[in-house]
Image 1 (cartoon, rainbow, N blue to C red):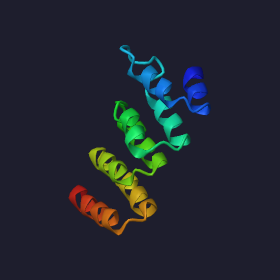
Image 2 (cartoon, rainbow, N blue to C red):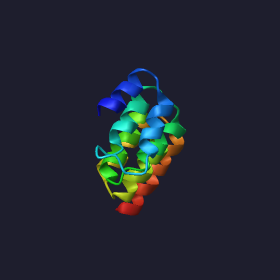
Image 3 (tube, helix red, strand yellow):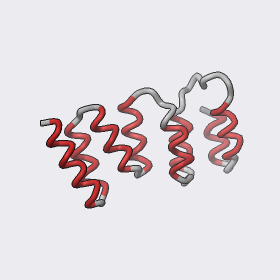
Image 4 (cartoon, rainbow, N blue to C red):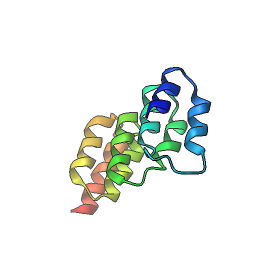
Length: 110
């Protein structure tokens, strides 16, 4: 965690990316990398590179929400078949289009 935190705090985004891209999977997983990118105000495509490497769907959902990537959060909630998470995205996203998608997904789960 220390390297990830230091690279993020000092704006060394290339070093953070290189650390994540090293051959071995980091023993700490990719969640700290995603969190650092979110907290560092990085763009969505950079944040997605880390979140997409996380294998636990619930963690992916939380990070998509934390990053405000609502479309992907909604998709993840639907994959989890979790009505409360779909409702959470619907209430927080502020997008009429995504809110309509959420209603459609809820209808499919019923």
